[in-house]
Length: 196
Image 1 (cartoon, rainbow, N blue to C red):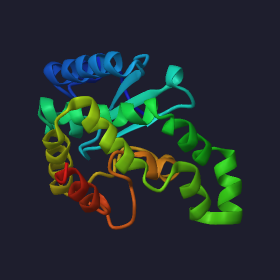
Image 2 (image 1 turned 180 degrees about the vertical axis):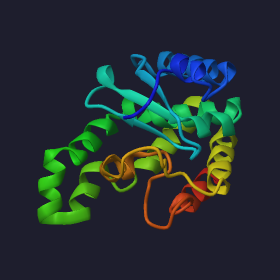
Image 3 (image 1 turned 60 degrees about the vertical axis):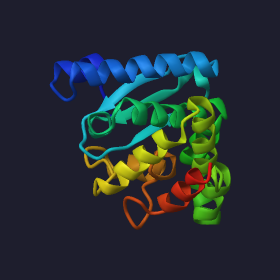
């Protein structure tokens, strides 16, 4: 990923010190709660609010948020998003997603297209992460509010990243980079969270 450490992002004026510290502190706290090593934390300079975790194992995970996400969300909403992304690490969703984006994914794409990649990544990947996040934070309204604010923002596709990278990671973002733009598929997630 083209991203900077939180300290570098502050120095470059891409996010405030408060936002960067909040991101680091909440990530550290939730890693302790979930029994995970702290991933490499990165901030992508981009106004589109979104987040992604990538890696093959919890020990080598990179957790990246866009500057637009940390600027948009309040503390409770950001905590819910961080819990969502870290739940992917805890559930080892990052491993299947990494396989889906690797050479195996390319060869499967040639023979099975989107269905093969979807099988590797899991059809209800984001819903399961939403439920795990709510279990960790004990506060469904935080994630509901975060998803609503991101959907209302007008766009969650980071324009600063190469198209090839976005294509390989499209389904692994907090708001997947699917056809239909921001909010596509999010309404079902919100309906489920509102029932909790």
